[in-house]
Image (cartoon, rainbow, N blue to C red; front, side, top):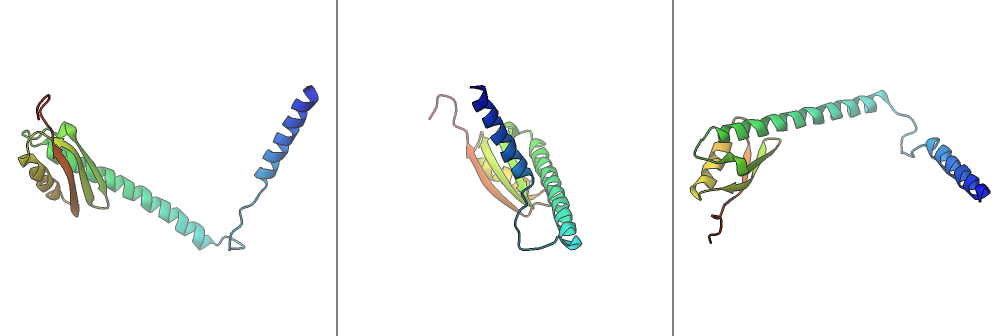
Length: 125
């Protein structure tokens, strides 16, 4: 019984040791400095893009929240590269277009996809 456990342990250690020394196979024989520089700048650019998207999303949401006649609690805002998507519900049909217009007025917004719907009254039709 103990010999089976020892054998399993030895096989597991062998697999781990083999996988740690394995190299990935690529077309390039050696990594060039320009490749690693491009990778580093690409990840920095994506982090900057995410930060800009979050800032734009907050700015749009805060602009919507400033309008007291609109209940912004049921509205979610997503932003990516200037394109804003509005999801959720509003209490009145006239607010659907108004919220989209407010979002378009925010600097940095290039397009607005409006997926807002009118919230039905509780128990009503």
